[in-house]
Every structure is written in structure tokens, then in C-alpha cells.
Length: 146
Image (cartoon, rainbow, N blue to C red; front, top):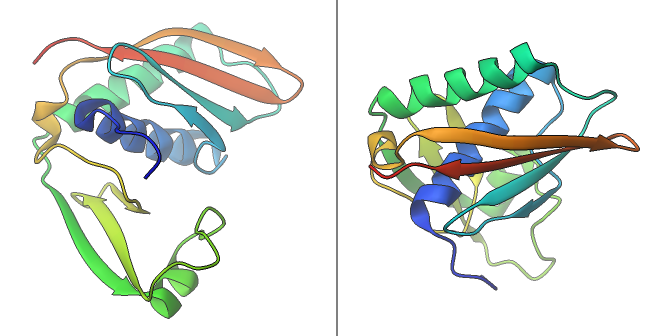
């Protein structure tokens, strides 16, 4: 892993990605910048979000955070990973053992980063701003302390 991600922010990114895909069928972000104080995720979308949609995304993520879902990891074979998950970001020389991070039944994703043990450890999720340009939606967010 090139960067040392903050476990709270990284876990929040997973929840945001799953929420975005469930609401807009846009897949996971194609670009992310995850930092301890603030983070951003970029999605392919055909339009900007409305104020109501921004509030709904924030509300859904916070409901999951408060649900106290466990965050677990399992290891599966490369073949199984390629059959079950989008593996576009996997390096060509990846080993045969691939890590899957699960957040309850809400999200399952190939991942190498650190995570919290439970969603309640994330704290309050807050979208600070959004921007839309040329089919790319950027969501900036931060977390309030636990």
C-alpha cells in the first residue's frame, strides 16, 4: 500500500462507495484521496447531485455508522476474487491470496487498507461539498470525532 490511510476515513470511504452505488448504480469511486482531516471521492455520474440527494447520502451513511456493523476480513483465491469482484485495480502480479473487507452485510470489497473494527468507531460522516464537471462528481467529506 502506497499510503497509510486513516482507518476511520478509509472505512467511511467504503460506506460512501456502497451508498453511492446503491443510490445511483455508479459503481465505486474511480479516484479517491483519503486523509485524516478530509477526503474526496470521484464518481462517474451524468449530473450533479441535488441538495436532497446530498442529505440522503449523508443520512444513509450515518445510519450504517450507527448500526454498529462489524468490519471483518477474509482471504480468498485470486480466481474467486476475479469472479466475484471488480478487480480492475488489482496489480497484475498480485498473489493468489486476496483480502476482502466486509462491513456487515452492507459492503464487501477487495482492499489492502486499514479499517475500524465496527462502524460506530467511524464517527459522524459529513459531506462538506460536492462538485460536478465533465461527467465527474466529486464528493468531499470529513468525520466528526467519535
